[in-house]
Structure formats: structure tokens, C-alpha cells
Length: 310
Image (cartoon, rainbow, N blue to C red; front, top):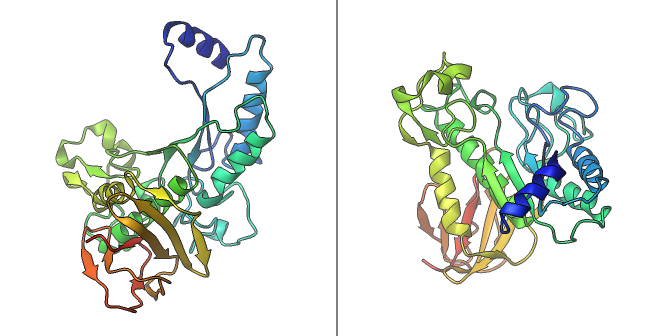
């Protein structure tokens, strides 16, 4: 079916791009909690591509895709993007996983796709990789305190801002060409925009007993806009790297010059020696602080941008 679709589309649309895959590294998975459930997404994608290549007169895809989820939908708290370990869910408390509940960290998923592709020379070596769906799963699995929707709990939104930002930065650094969030205005999953009381029953059905999400951008939605300002037009000058609990990703752009995006995977704050002199520290809330010469700024779980531009 995929090969037939590609062949027909290319007859009538010369500039259309054909995307293959969307196998899921988490979420519901294709077969539930078995050895090929939400786990071996890279194996499943490879099998699909092999079957496509085996078709007579194949019209192969221009893009491959996957879904960058951290875990099965029922893991709470879901692992953050750098790990496959949950801080409080017994099904994912060992780093020696990988298992069907928390197969592999989001930070490592793109590399698995690239290794799978390297064994398939029938596709271009530089074929683009898209993440066509991702997020923290349902709002109910990433919350703090008693308010599962999180609209009145500050810590919940700090966690969600941190998850979204760290995933976005890491996937961009790994060369994922498109990163699609699930789902900006869904009122139950990864909510970035609230619809208030006007939300249709179908939009509230999975979480109809929860409080109404206020109208407008959620704190995580606002953080995504800030991330766009940081990353738009920028390039990563080297891979993101970690030292202990600290991650840093160097970027450069015409508007901000050389800069570093950094965070800690610890809960709380941690002092950070930048290794070079930056004048400003920017937060996902849109605030800017002036740094003193030689100052060790405090990192938190939400990424910050350090630069000299403003």
C-alpha cells in the first residue's frame, strides 16, 4: 500500500515528499506490552523499509519518521528525555532496562534510527529523519501535587516546561529535521493551549472529570515560543554533552552570536561553571539576568540560554 501510494502521488505531485514509518518509541505501541510493543521501534521501522524495498518497481520514501515518546502511556512520572529511568514508577526504575515500558531514552532514539538506516544502503545516507509525534504523554502522568491538569500547580508546569524544552533541544541537536508535538490544543495530552469551558466534549472525553484548562497558552506553550526565539536561525556548533547531571549544548546564530543552552537533570538547582564569559542568562519565562564576571550561575531542570547579545 505504501509503495502504491508513493507511485501514484509522484505521478500527480512532483514536489510532494513521501514519509515512511512513524513507528513509536513509546506511547501505546503497536502490539501492547510484548517484546515488540512500545519497544523496538527501530526494528519495526527497519522491517517496514525492507518490505517496501522488496516490492517490484519500488518508489521509496524521501523521509523516515518515528514517534519520540519517553515510555508507555501509563508510566508516571515518565522518564525525562536524557534517561529511560522514571523517578517513581517501579516499572522503570532501573537503568538496565530497556524494557517494553521504558525502552530507550529520547536522547538515544535518533541514533538508533541512524544505525538502522546505515544497514540499508537502498536509502540515501542523508535521508531526513522526522519526529512526527511526541510529548510527555497524558497530562495525568506528568503532574505534581493534587491538580492533575496542572493549571494551578507551579511545579507541574515547571516539570512540563523542562520536559518539552529538553526534548526539543536534544532532538534538534541530533539533526531531526521536523519535531511535531502531540498535541498542542488537546486538553488531556501534552496541552500547550487551553480551550477553557468552550472545549468540545470530544476534546475533554479522556479527562472529563478534571478541571477545565484556562483559555490561552499554558506555561509549556509559552516556553515553546521562547525556544523558537533561541533556536530559529541558529546552528549547533557541537553535539550536546553531559558531565554528571549537567547538560550543555553550544549554539551560534547571527542574532545572538555564540551561546550555550544548559540545564541540570537534578531536581532543584546546581551551580554551573560556563567555561567562558557570558553576560546574560535567559529563562523559559522570558526573563533575563545580568551575570557578574566569573559568576557561577545556578542551573535548574528547565534549560537556560547564556549569551552576550542582550
